[in-house]
Length: 309
Image 1 (cartoon, rainbow, N blue to C red):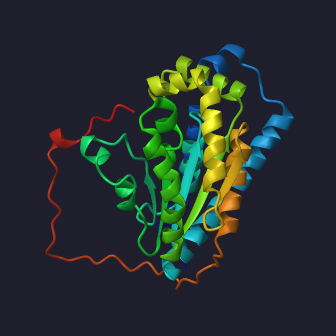
Image 2 (image 1 turned 180 degrees about the vertical axis):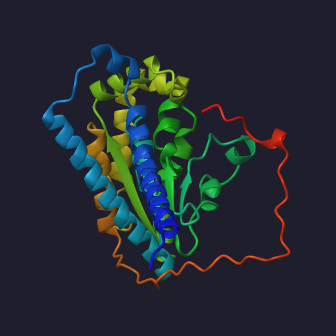
């Protein structure tokens, strides 16, 4: 028979579990608010229409469902010792980082790693071009998501004059063979290009300029990309034409609408890998062991973080 004390403990446990679940949903809300101009929201104060509210509910429902499938994919990758490389390329502010966040948010960072390499240092500039990327490639049972990749040479380096014509041509001679070699070694390579319009990039850049929380995302290189829009377009077209190979084809994500782009990309990613659900043994929480001779030591008060909230 359950006592009042045990019932209260069960109710308290259920309350904590609900709070933890709501907290995970709040993370999603924080991400959404992060992508809006808060001053604009406060200024307009317009309530959402029923259509907008329904669209938002549908988005989150699908996102949570897809993230559940990503967890199944992760389990299968570990169990099968599969190796996956996913490249995310696109113009500045195309939404690459946003989809990477949603893919990795519920996953084990030891299994799904993000590689976002900075500009090469002086030593790396003298190495074989692909050398600094190789160290980030996956071992068995790992997925690596490259937030920009070796295709920097075909894009920003070409447009901004950071590589010579010979280095540029050598890249195109080498990259198909490099990716074929990865495929032969058992690494699945999936490549996404996030496509946005001139007008959409302009709008997103203005949003970053006027949002103090997002100004860090703007660099002088980003601003220069507005001036060189057509040069980047030409570089992209050449890149897709010369590196679209059967072993590692390009996939273009229509990314003007961020939410649909995320859902479409995640669903497509799931479709590219023949994963199945992995059966797990039931988890049983063991009883906590209590020792009579153990006495918990007090923590000095000055070590505690002040509770200001």
